[in-house]
Image (cartoon, rainbow over all chains, first blue to last red; front, side, top):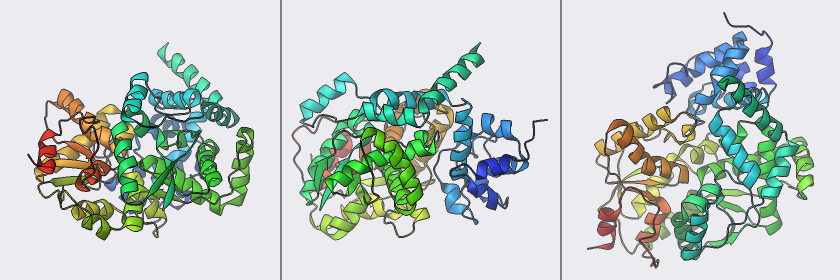
Length: 169
Length: 291
């Protein structure tokens, strides 16, 4: 049996973007419309909301939040305008504070921190741009770094890397 | 009309021909694009997932640059549009949150006053230029093209929340038809391309792309038109990955919508061969340019 935290629903509801969990009526329209749920039974948006309501904190945070596409089909279908896709952002940010972030996402955050961009410019591409007569790319990596330090991204990334190396051992 | 051009990471670093077409075709229709200096990434979904204030501050820094330029923002990438537009609406309506974000921005010498409007390229084409004008200015009608369109989730998501916004799933089809092409109704047309799970769960990401490609092929499409640079990669590079993973070949050339618009409008771009495509587009080019 998983550990139960009766306050978890309110923790999620009080996290930015998480308040939709309070209006969920468990109708399941989100699951029936979810393109990922079709391929992966583990990803079940209705069940995810139920697990938040019931307080299965570790399961929700550490097993489930990263399958969502953020396609917002569920937002379109939810009769409560509750938007599981939005709640997913809340639980991801809670998981991230505990260092649980997939490697691909950590990589993107690292790129942003170091270069100011999610997709850094490669040398050959800069040459190609020049050949096409496109202007130089103008990015402020310094400001991206400052904003990320100020909002705690740097600590989160360090923690995520630490957590994963623990898992690998 | 004059806009601050927000290109974002993917177009400028991976899809230079998209940028080239955009810079040629928008002025052709009287839309002036002014480059934004010293931007950062828009902070799309992966970054939004990690921290709320961090997201808003990163996006608002870009908006503050446009505010200094006294121009509305024009985005060609769906994720840039979604991130910047939602931030502009949230910070326009919530003063308390705006001052919280501005506290972060003060450390990079910026302030966002909440005044910038954010537009998607489809919105500008439909509303500033108009479908009729586009139709009237077609020089090379795309009559032999049967196009499977992919608008992309993050272009239409804001409208789900704010119904008065312009971009819907019909917008792209309307514009494609104005250029003389046919559009096909294919299975899973409204579904996500699978791109957001690229690098997080590649297996599911590919399955989503594959089911759409199957639907496109069955509906008789001879090419695909995307708007978002992420959708483009998902269908173009994705076809090679799907061939490797499932042994299936779809051979569907994928175009940036803006590229088709440039061609249909009769623009002469010096080096047509410089393209982002991995799936060969020559058969379709021949249909458009005439043999």
